[in-house]
Image (cartoon, rainbow, N blue to C red; front, side, top):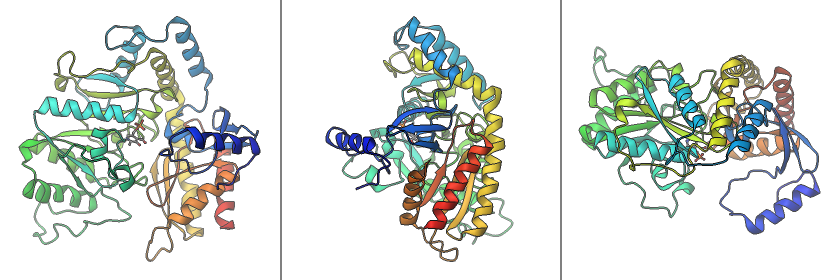
Length: 444
Ligand SMILES: Cc1ncc(COP(=O)(O)O)c(C=O)c1O
């Protein structure tokens, strides 16, 4: 039985157990009553700092007044008309905004969805349609959602797949380049050192592995539609690839006419200090999938693609609720706040958070790695620095005890703690969160 911080939360959790699907992934019993910015309160009146942002969603903090006003104004005009069959200004304005900030120099177009998984489904379908090819490549550790198409690409935990087969049969997984835990660094080292493709590090080694093993021995390269990849692996453990990876991957895609499809569902919308995490890598994708932070908590997602790829005809793909007007209004207010001030704050506060965590890493050997970009930060919990053995039990206890002390965190991957506060988090709030985290680690 979980530990509660009050009787009212306990009674809600007991009622929930009776009527809500047990497949949800609750780690501790936080029952929310209200929130403002980075602060939230539970139904028993306890205050917490929310360094989860409702799984990286509340980009502008909880109930930002500008976002709430935009929602109210739109709700008074109309709630729904289905952008699939009709037109309304707010959806068009949002598409214009998104195509302006899309990380592609070529003009782009937008397909609206209600969630990350739906954005991935749209990306998969467009890639199939636009290329008339059928194979895909994805990465171990990836999380792209749990719908049957997205699930075929997800490979972060066996529980996601257990008994849910068959999904799409045409996806081949390869290792994601993890500088802290390289598995392929030796790959290709038997080749002469003057070989221009000689891998310098894990990033290039993975791309070489795709070229030589996947395309060389399994998949006909002219039948591969796309490579779906997260610019920072989220649920896989907040893994930032080496700088060599994306340029090499882009070149591989170009050599074979394969689409580079980016899952920016968790890393996008300013969280890393730029609109999209791929902008740190200096390459352009062909398609991107976004959701989560796009509308500060209202359900909305989007798939953005180069205009030249959007060749599908009317009826090929659509959604009744996708691009709901209230969500679009919330999104426009969100994007304006991010552009005006919060992306810069993410860069500044992210650097501060990372520096403080790296200082902690020198004091606590259970912190094996601190990584991330902007306010997408993870700390990997290990048994000891020599073996780097993953300590999932300790990670779970850290997350749970942080909750008991008023800090909401989430795990990521087998043994990483993720810190994803709203993008308007302040330095005093980071200091307060790290005081709690330090106390929790010392007590354990
Ligand atoms: C990178 C990534 N892609 C896709 C998804 C699926 O998003 P949703 O839960 O909105 O379907 C998630 C959710 O965590 C994610 O982190």
